[in-house]
Image 1 (spheres, rainbow, N blue to C red):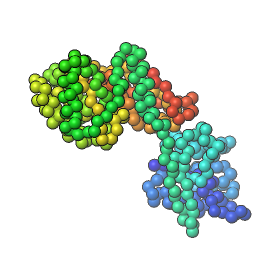
Image 2: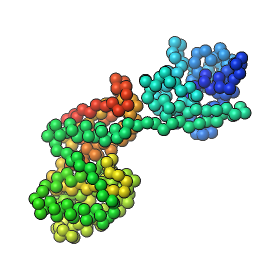
Image 3: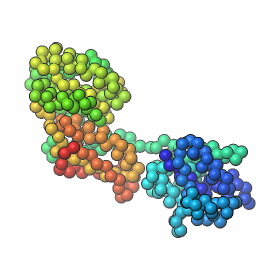
Image 4: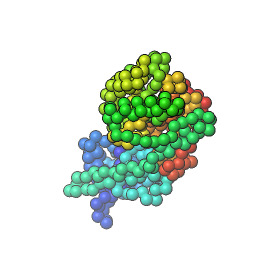
Length: 341
């Protein structure tokens, strides 16, 4: 990872009132960061070359391209913050950049503080980035609302039962039995997300739709995904035998944003009701602060939407930042005709 060294701030650290900024501070910080595996990028304001204690050596670093000076007429603090944002880099500085809090929402999570002891620089740690609570769920909920406006039903209920292979099989048997007894269409009996549908399941989908009466999606927290996959085969056999089905149902395990660790949900769908693919793609425009987090989880959003709508294929979810959305939590969702994944 890149770490931008605020050269002026580092050079001025620990100097006496009548002393010049110290080049050795910058060199110590470079050495310390490299030892920690970081890639230092040294940025100095225009005045530092005239104030530093060893002007000749400092100017040589500038001329050789090892140190960088901000463009003339540019505020060094703003330049450093903008560069860190663009390169997703950290900043070594004891300057809190308070005057830029309104423009750059993640300063505390990017800034690495430091101290100097006996000529050695001690690198601190940055604060954990703040995230808007449940922003992925909020975006998904808004997206599903837009699908419903286009007359595509989605499942909204969020439950949760303690996870175990036996509990999953029993819940599936109870729901299917009740749906047959009451004549209830069990379309969209749950939600599923972040699917990497394991390869066997993906290959079995077409055959399952022709041979199985039901598709059972087991929805679990990501921490429980691997364990739940181990149950899948036994669940299919148990449900098929208990209900005396001609063909065992297909059981697929998927990660789920809304499911608590240690619990599960079921999405039970008649095989002939499964939609081949989403009819719309999803375009999300979001503030810079939340962009990276939402982009990283875009597949989770796509899989949740697919599960709620009862589709095998994910909608294409694109995420882009907007300078017009200045505050964390701001976003806009627009559906676009499409669906080819």
